[in-house]
Image (cartoon, rainbow, N blue to C red):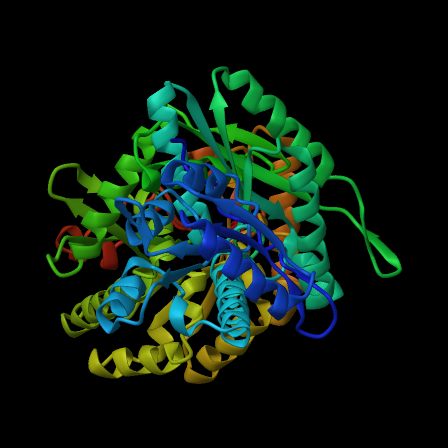
Length: 591
């Protein structure tokens, strides 16, 4: 016997709450069939359809066609028990309600019928037309209400697509079927590009309309047998099974990208969006649902990194990278408690005197297996996970404490520069934390310089401006790091009076060989000086770069030409007391 198909909710109405039910009577006694038919006629008039099954096998065959709204089942079916039929039909997937009929009332049979899954129980000796009418109406209406609740639990209310719950249930069954038939299953995770911008610009109602239009386009772009689901927000997924050729998957992904990129009318305007699609294939790539989803998600982000409006298949290289990332994240979570972080310090030197004016504190991770790990490898991950906040507080406390110790040792009162990330600036109490650490370390605020990159400012300019003003009022210095690499450099210089700027090493590297880089550096120095800002050049490695920067009146430099970053214990007194580069020669006044 094949699995039964869940019955559609197809009860018709005839005004108000009147219904014309389609009924299957499962009864082996012809007299009882005639009696029941008469009661149904009295209850519903001619507004019902009745089909009669006399045996167990005939009943299951008709139930399997899923064309009835309710089943009336005799408790005795010859040598078989009607409750066994109810159990088997429900097990095979039948969803329409069952009403069990028996010769006489029996409380134990009543309870047994309910446990078997029946909606109601009626004793034939006591059955009247009104009683049968009530039982059928109640069972059908309760069934419809239960189906509505089930749909609400399994379908996205905005788009009508399957939600995450139904998606996972469907995927479990699909993967099991693929195993039996040795076929491929593809999962596509689709994320709209620039959806937040559209939502913020045109409003949430327009955003909802866009999501509904995208849902409809996805439905029309895939096969009828494929599942389209909305996982939340602007993220959708498509499940395709019965595949033998990965090339078919690429063709469908291309088609989806094409239909998504077509304009969408939102009110009186047209908007354009696109999608990034990540694809993972079972069992080629992974062998579990969670890994399948994670792999498709990783491939989707890879598609976004490559410029969006494209699809990307999950690859072995991505799997290796994901494993390394997970290992790094796991290690990072306990690194602070295990005291594995280190600070190295790189001197900043005045170009006129050659003397040290400050030290930049640079974070390193002393990994137990990989050795000393640079910030490029782990800081982005720390920012993504939020770990940068406690790590950043440790960096600030350690750097301020070390500088305070150098001051107490009698070294010249230079400043220390500490990098802050955009994630740290989201903390409402960050200025309070900075003030508390300065007080704990007995360090005057003027000796601390906080560096923030220009790109981080772009993520939340108003918030950063507000906090930088708090730092300035506190007496803490501010520097804009990697300056010149952002998109609004002039606006930022105007917004932060009193700040220093640090020219990015990418400009300094080619300042003696590339005419455009030289022009940019000259312009930045002149512009900063006209605004009474100090300029520090990063990444100075050659005498030629030093000469160029001196010639163009840069204020200070740091880089390997001056000194490499080293641990605090390697910073000797000579760094503080002698020029690290020759001072600038003054022109002779004699003829």
